[in-house]
Each structure stands twice: as structure tokens, then as C-alpha cells.
Image (cartoon, rainbow, N blue to C red; front, side, top):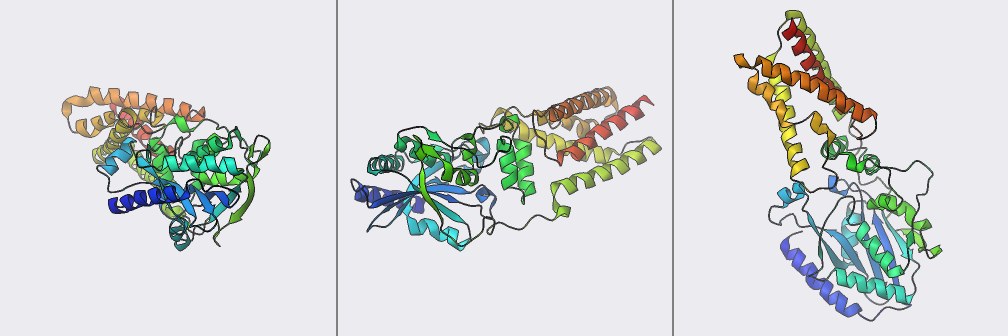
Length: 389
């Protein structure tokens, strides 16, 4: 949103808040709304909001998912983990217009609240969208557009909210839920698996799974407060399927897994040739380890500077780190053999340690990581074989 639209929204919420004060009663209906995935990567996990419908007035959507691309240093702050989101109140038809146009499924769950609970909820919502309170520090898995409105509902209910998953499958992890939501966008998930470490790999409680609006949508119909149902009914507001707005699956030959094994095949052929001729292709090693080193620089930023959830620790640092840049730097230096030998020995040891970590389930690897990790293991082994010979 542009800054002008942001200011208009803030002005509008003040007007709406003033108009709705003291107007909560039997003629007021409140809904928890979940929006299914859209085509953009930032829409794949869905969205949530609260709808307040006072008879005779324009229904209002309380939306905790507004951010400003035009904010100063937005990209840098996003990568660093200092992304600020806003809570705003907008007319319901404004809220729905985009989702209808983009063929996104929208589901509304009517809350089983009495007048006092509705009044408390509306008071909390109006307090949240005041200009001095509207901005909050977004956290992808702990504090987002789904967890914020859910917390407001829980506070308004005045008792503990009990949520349970509709199936008896083993508890999911943050990463497994993300992978399910991003199944048709494998390169996006590849980036997530690269950037986020074991902090998203532990079994979640039912409450923690509500970071995902899609998971939350399945849990609300059976949720209870003080032993009674949280919702009265659920209604699908748009005539679209759960995945209608998403792009089609990525072709298998364009996935990270295919790319990874294709690169491994190239590396294997080069390594066999190099062993036969007893001379390594320094250009390939310089390019490959240089790319690993540059990726390691990105991980260095994420691990030691970024405040994103679960970027630190990240055991991929055993494989992808700035020390990989020693290979392209030293490949053509005559007096660097000892240094390169030490590096390649350490590389094999560290890659073996990472394999043990993966096997132990400490950090779940992306399937494409396996062939990509085998390439430096193979090249380091070939270097040591030829160096010894």
C-alpha cells in the first residue's frame, strides 16, 4: 500500500471506530474470516481477519496483515527480520474486492459470543487499530495476521481457548506445514529451507499450528471456550476452491530437485574425467565453491545479524560458509596447496557431520540439498586423492 492509502485507512478506522462505539448488541454479528492461498509467494499461507457486522451499517473488516512496500529500507528490513505490519479497519466490501477478483476462497466462522463478549472484542479491535497501536513487529511463525486476531478473540471470550487438529496424524512442524502450503512453489520452499534452521523443526502444539490461516480454518469449527463451541456456523463466501487462485504445479524438470541432480551428474562426469587425467578442473571448482561461499555470506547475515525467527542456528553453515571462498581464491596460487588440503579435509568432515545431523532429524533438509552437498564432497575427495598421488 502507498503512504496515501495508509493514511486514508487510518483516517477511516478512526471514523468507523467512533461510529461503532457503544453500538454492540443482539444486532451485531462477529466472524473470524480465513482467506485461502493466492498466486503470489507472500499469499501462499493465506490470511485472516475479523468481520464485525452491525445491522444497518457497513460491515467492517479488522485486518492485521497490511504492510507498506514504500517504507524506507523495506527490503533490507524484511531480510533482517524487522518487518512492521499494521492493523487497520476497512469496509468489508473493500476487503473482499481483491479476493473475489483473484478467485481466492474466503471462509467466515460466526463466533458464538454474547453481547458482553462482542463488546469486549470490538473494544480490543478498536484499540488495536488506533494509529498509536496499529504498527507491530511481524513474526512469520509467532506473531502474524492469524495469531493476532485469534488472540483478540481469546481475550474477548474471557477464558482459555481450546483448539485441536481435525486429524490424528503426528504433530506437524512449522516446516512441514510450510511445505504443504508451498508444494507447487518448490523454489520458494527451497529458499525457506536454506534460510531457516532447526527452530522450525520441532513438533508443534495445536495452538502453535494456528500460525497458518489454512490450518486455523480447519480447527475453528471444533474449537471450544469454557466447554462450549467457539463458533455457531461456518460459511464459504466465495465460489472458489481452496487452490483456485494458485499457479499450477512447477514442472518436474524445473524443480530444485531436478536441477540438483542434473548439477550432480555434471560434477560426477567432470570428477571421473579429472581422476582419469589426474588433474582437477579448477574453473569448475572455483565457480562451484565460489557460489557456495557467496551463499555462505548470505547465511552469515541471516545467522548473526537477522532477527528472523529460526535463522539462528542453522546447521547448513557447516556446508555453506564464507570459507568456501578459499577455493576460488587459492586455486591458481602455487603456494596454497597445504591450505587447500586442510580446507578439503575439513570440508569432508563438516559435510559428514551435517549428514549425521540430517539423519538424526535435528534439521530437515530440502530434498534438493542432497545432490548439491554431494558435489563438494566428491570434489574435495577427488582433490585429496590426486594430491596424495
